[in-house]
Length: 465
Image (cartoon, rainbow, N blue to C red; front, side, top):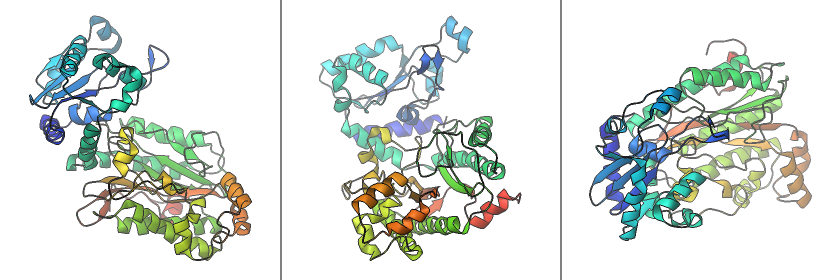
């Protein structure tokens, strides 16, 4: 945990932003995999972690704005708990680590919240993403379960997003700790990947590094020869010379802060000329985007600028044609780059997305587009100092999408489908880094993870990292 003052300052700021009412932050409970006693690895709710810091199940934090009072509800362990999972300090002692001086058993929580609700006091809570959390809120508030999510407090959502979006120095240090481990993982993958080895052998090594450093993966690791399937979690393929391996991975520090990095590496140790031409286009697109990241700039504009750079280069290869300004405005580039440039990063790898993507990635200056590709932008709003976001352009050749657009002659003025056919089995390339928005520009976080072709090929050949 951070020092107690950190959590006190966060809650004080939240009270100022919300102004009145009772703020309720249910922590997560254990979640069973296939029967009640067999749990998934525990992950605390990120907003509870942010404001109360305690990383264990069965807790709820309550903030009374008018009374300027903070409280944690939870139960101390029983003798049976001690036998099975070991002893932990009393809740009242643990709460002090978060700067909270008052605790109570869970059995008193429903009465406490219900009493305020009956007095017509506003009870603020965030939208639940787990069904059991929704059920608890339904019980505490005395309302039908089906109405709970819709009644979540927009005022609280906006206040939490405002706070969690801007990262402090200690938060950035945590993200860079995660990146140190992630760098080890990627170097190991580059040194291990070779024809004849399976994807699962590589993922076993890289996730073993994460666990050995006390940092579990922040999301299911994507490690695949089929990089054109963005969230491909199958790991049964065998590497072959001439194939590309996309690895998208990150870890979570003991305090919950995440990393998220992608690299594309040649399974045979060297990129073919055809692969290298596409790789350099993606790298150029990312470099251009990184140079544009600064406070006050709309992330949507940076996305489109990166798309323009890559589309122009695809035109030089003969895959696109016509006026590239018109092509990007129409969305023709989305055949090759159909996802967004990046997303917020912090306690969640898609930070705060459970609160509502439009609250996190959009503001009053930009609305979500309905255009294919642009509609998938998780981040479009104006950037501010202290934001941490990913920068992850990519180029993909998705056979199903190519077939659909070709059949419809969609954007035929901008896409040479005959030449695209020669890339049908190419799969895809993505390059991703984690970036801090600074007062005058941006900084790529963490020690550099090789991404230049010469550096990746040197490491894969046994060179120094």
